[in-house]
Length: 392
Image 1 (cartoon, helix red, strand yellow):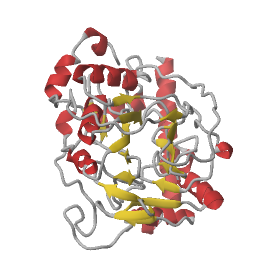
Image 2: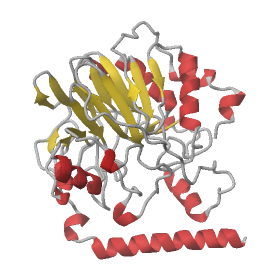
Image 3: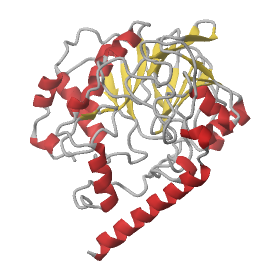
Image 4: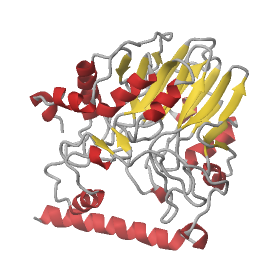
């Protein structure tokens, strides 16, 4: 009982501090922040962006509001039921090449959605975050795993992809460090340049379907996905979210960013830009209630395997797990559930996870075409086993 009271008092104090900091720092400009002005489209109403596919709350099984999750987290009401996470994960540093030329490709998972892709003489970084916490003013979920590459060991970066403005994906402190050191090309979706610019960092922003040539034969395409955005209090969906396709001579790289399933046709759209040699797909932060297999804004392994199939990716790597605790699944549940889902579908292409900080050589593209689609219902039935049910 005393532990529960101390737990509650500590979290109430934390929220009081957050509220005070926000009250002291938020000025009228941020009470109604405007990041983008432009013509009306199917996904922009002149004020805010939106998904063009249906909201898929029905994927929450059983469905429970996030407010309930927050209330239980705040009070510690389900502390005994929450799967334990390690306080610290050991990461073994490995040598990282300064460059990788030609069609050879080496990929290193730095942690969360931060991945270093090296190919064609380019060093590409996705959603870079080296900060110890994902949140404003040093408040937010803390790392359990240090970055897989120490910042001072990171090779010169040429291209950065920023999927949206949530703190665990758009870390302004890291972007500022990278800009001051390397002056990379930073690409994001509409409205995010206003936010990145607050750190004194320039960026290029495009609408869904927009293309930007990096150099002859290599371009970045901003692609649709299913998510949302916010940075402060009332700026919800003032900036756009996206996935990316990097078109390369040896086969494309797809970075899903942060996404729910929606209609999943955004993966089909990305596949039309050419063969996908490597897909970086989120598999974590999907469980807010026991048994839940996906959230409207975050896919889990059940939907991730369908994304890989739709892309026709010859190699997919699961990311967005194992770094910041954002939901209630166990630490190793995402990779274990991914392996079980791949076994159920029997689909072609390699889809697994890699250790943080260990460079992985990506083979040349080989089409995995020919795997029949497996319905979500059938996949869930296949996964309804004692071993999977025991995954918390």
